[in-house]
Length: 294
Ligand code: NAP
Image (cartoon, rainbow, N blue to C red):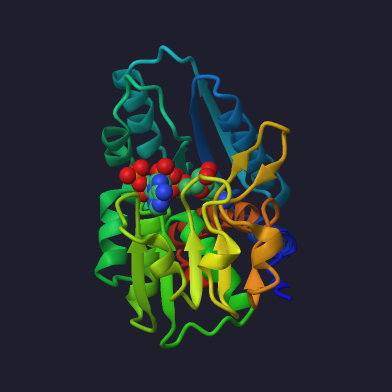
């Protein structure tokens, strides 16, 4: 029976630590850390994500500045706002909630964010720093959250076979770069065109699944003792929230597994707070946040 990797309580512990840390800065007479959150349109899922992120900011004492723009906002208007926030000394981080409406180019928007304020770590400069092993970049929130969780639960990664299913720019690819960074483990990335997915997943000692398809990974596709990190978030017709793996059956075979909800999701939000405070710390002349050291 697998250990359940409880992202919800670990994230709460981290938030409590960050709250104390911010209180110390305020006592020293420093301003609060500040995160600008931009949402374009009224996508209900995005509204929930943004609300969660802002509530978490408020809990730890980060000032979240909310810019809710209408669906018909032009790319130029959005770029103008980002330009202003890039130049605002009192704004530490800038987050543009994805997905953006189809008339706006996501890559042009990400490219426009000052890489030093790119709390999501999606800017090509930050991805490039991660790829080349430079320590002064910002690591994307979901991979960072997974990394912190693996360390917290003392999951041994040395010489392990890691298989990542899903190759998106925001989860799969940066996750693979994080594992490659210290050359501890051997990483395989699977995607839509992988010929025989089960052949790879059966070989995994650590399996990370980030696709967005319920039940993509079943118990017969994993080996005994595997560590399973399920990133997927899928809403079933009956309203239930599930990941990409058959949690009930896989937990009988795995040595550790993340639940959905309550696994990776809360760790992603915690990492957003860590990245914001890390940027703030550096601006105030302190070192980057220790939790971002990977
Ligand atoms: P995405 O951009 O849609 O990427 C999914 C990846 O999976 C793509 O590389 C896709 O390939 C690949 N894929 C599609 N079908 C596949 C298959 N049958 N076998 C193997 N790979 C396949 O999604 P994402 O943004 O990475 O998110 C993935 C899931 O994680 C979603 O459910 C999302 O809601 C969730 N998520 C959760 C968190 C969290 O904090 N828990 C954070 C981010 C995302 P193509 O590009 O060719 O389609």
